[in-house]
Length: 118
View 1 (cartoon, rainbow, N blue to C red):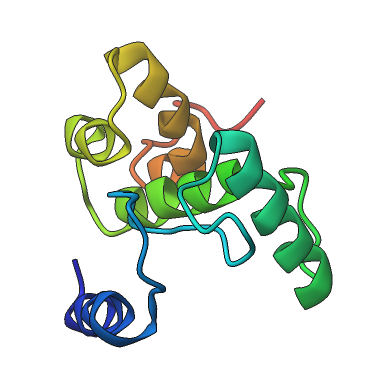
View 2: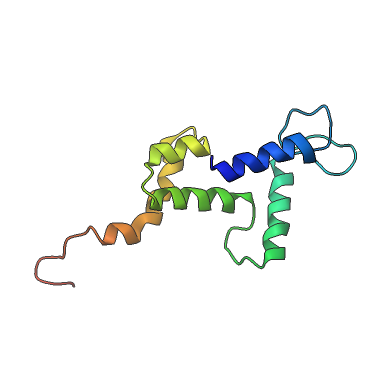
């Protein structure tokens, strides 16, 4: 995890996070203070934030963050198994979908077709 993210999380936990019984990292900021009830809540928060920021994307929820992370890791040379570990995929097939993202990178490695393009 990058150092600035680690510092921000430490500050959040030590100073900014309201006290409550929940052991979850992020909690609701309205009563009753506690953990979110499910992943849908996070998806709605991300969707509203993306709309507010004017981000245009086919993906509108929290999946956009996961996809962006995986794509960035792939472009920086991470293996599919490393990406799968970070995303906590149970199956390598789930991570394999990110291989298609690297088509432009793969094109630079492809040899020209003998006799020219058809």
